[in-house]
Image (cartoon, rainbow, N blue to C red; front, top):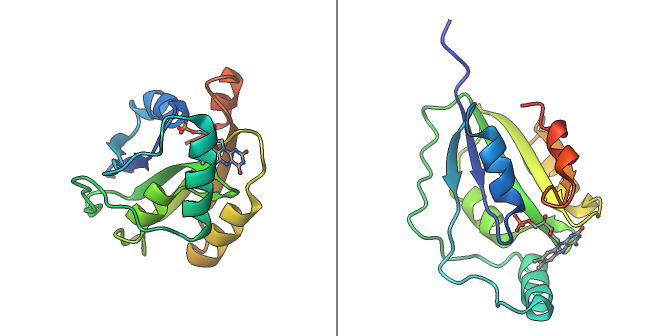
Length: 149
Ligand SMILES: Cc1cc2nc3c(=O)[nH]c(=O)nc-3n(C[C@H](O)[C@H](O)[C@H](O)COP(=O)(O)O)c2cc1C
């Protein structure tokens, strides 16, 4: 039988998602979501701008986003939590992806919060998708052990 082919499609602003990609790169192809305009450098402005963007579900302009997932049996989406929600680079990429008939897993990485709004969103839009939540894997390396992909 053919091997279950997987892809990890993710966004990362401060490196947590990147660390997860590094951990998964042996089992999955990796595709990073890039946006035209990143959040400002200052932490305070990041919270203001990113928090607001995620609240209004702002549509980001993506750079060269390849939405072809035909080759894959499983699509794993990686998103930092912004304001209890999926981040806007990921929601914008999801708008371009057809995940029907795909096994889908979401890996959410937060500063420690439980991200109920993001989980509700996933449960309503992606029925049957698996959700794995990690707390700041850069600071808590053992969080990566939860990645039973
Ligand atoms: C705009 C913004 C909003 C955030 N909101 C939350 C939040 O609501 N709850 C939480 O636990 N962490 C929050 N965080 C922290 C990130 O989710 C966390 O640091 C995550 O691991 C970052 O992933 P990255 O390093 O791949 O970008 C927020 C970070 C940013 C930039």
